[in-house]
Image (cartoon, rainbow over all chains, first blue to last red; front, side, top):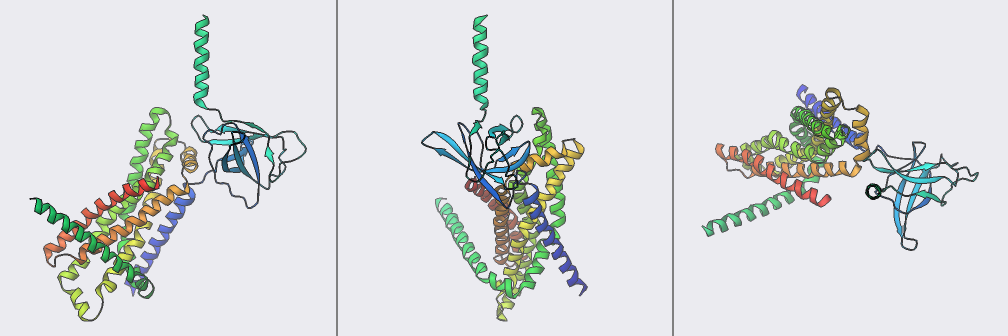
Length: 157
Length: 254
């Protein structure tokens, strides 16, 4: 009888520990930029270049994550990228002339959309489009410009 | 010479085919055993899983620790020691967790499964069961197989979790990586699909390792030497199968 109880206890402990470990791996190692809000509204923004922005990239305002990117599509007519964003419904008083720019977290970090508030009295709502956008900064282009510039200044000397 | 190679090849394919049929047979009995003889499965989960916790925990702690150490010493050359968490988590969750657990599982639990069944074969206990109209596959082999299949993913998860704590101990507590950066960078980079890849691997390895163990035991030569050979082969074949499958799964998932 005692033997059976030990086996049962050991098995139960092992399975609980295992499931706990699975749970730990799923919740604690992933999803730092997880954004879960029950009610959201959807807005779009057009960018000339999205860089390495991807689905699930965070959207933040004043450094706080208020939404995330759900879809990135290419518009064959205007030849730019259409980014669909969902924003938590709690933040429903964002001026509709706010601007969105694609920023990089740290020097080599992942990219996210940072929003700067505008001054309009009407607010973004479901289906509206963010008109003022700034494309991702492509590091290679910057380096290219820098090289060209330093090259020409050498020539002047 | 050529004929020898041919013979070996034919024998290999035949064994492989027989293994598949054996596997199908196990699957056929699995639901019934799982529901009607659940107690037998629980005992096997204890025998294969619960008793392996210590070796898994100790190995996980030190594998995680050495990963943290390597990640720190190499990344600090680029002043990027903050990303050690990413490196360790990817390595543990996707590769080392499932693979090392499967290898340890083969050594700790697989061998005991194989030798137990092999000894029953050698001492004619399996034939005795057949005489009593008890199907030995259903009574002995399937519960052991299911016990292994259930234990292995749980052991792999425990290994990865303790490995992360080991890496935390070395990188954060000993070497002074910022604790926030260590976990935050990891959480920002790892996605659910990375963890899922590890879980899929551990389930597949669990099935393969348990299958090979019970197969080697069930088909061993019924002598003392045969049982010994079966246990050795269990470890060798499992190791090879797991490493090959690991490469294949990674190639498919990526």
